[in-house]
Image (cartoon, rainbow over all chains, first blue to last red; front, top):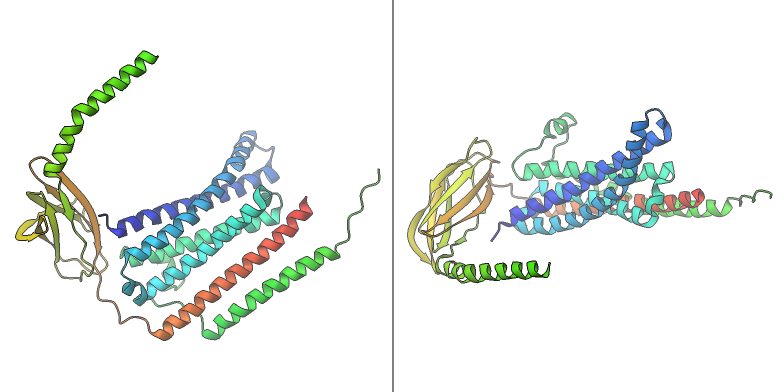
Length: 215
Length: 170
């Protein structure tokens, strides 16, 4: 019988690897697109490389994103089996890790939904491609942070410890908002989202149709 | 082409026939089983007692490393003369470690015909604090709900915005 913690380690490697690949591929795509838009024609060899990277990095990032999200669900299951329930409930560090994992998973699922809905077109407008890239990069940052917290749980520490100490982030006490702030966020954000959605819809209706060019 | 394929099938069949029964006999006669669960609580500064139930093994050892050693160390496992099911209970002690150390180890059991190695790890940790209070848990649940609300609302806005922006682009 294989130790469940070994299986959990394997699934963590899988989801971290896939999601890091997704982040790296998105960054490569952004850099390649920037070159093609702004610096095209300066160095012909770089033009060819940028075109190739732009073509291959996008599907690679989408595949890695989907695989990473699925592997994260798997690692959640193996993680809950690997540690006794009493330990999970009693540890504040575990609560912090779960919070970060859930946040990064929501961001990655959002990125998958956006990419699946709008397909390659998401890269056609600068603003949409910028928001999508930012979303994936925020997800990778949250995932890196939660892996650092997990390093403390495994008793190995983390390479980010010096940085976390410098910015005075302690991963040991439980991270909670004041109750009033949680309630405010819980109510205000969905209301604000609905208001913005309504505004986007009505501003579209108000936009006058562009007249067809004269023949 | 067809002759070659037939020749290949013949060789594979002969090999399977020649090796199959022997392997099966060897496995049933001396297959080693290792039944071991890493200790759930390992306190800092205390030796670690490892026990395992070994079936069909005559010798066993533990190879371990605490992560800071340049090479693995090995200690023998002793048969405690205690029977458990169809096997025997074997035991070994690992040296004391400090808090937070993760020890990886493998149990290597052997007999005259074969051997088997299984790998495990354990974490040395001081007893945890009494734990979180019910109020802490409630506040954490509220924080989790607020975080999810924040994330999902932001994503919803992005979804609508991108749809509108891309329709304009077409």
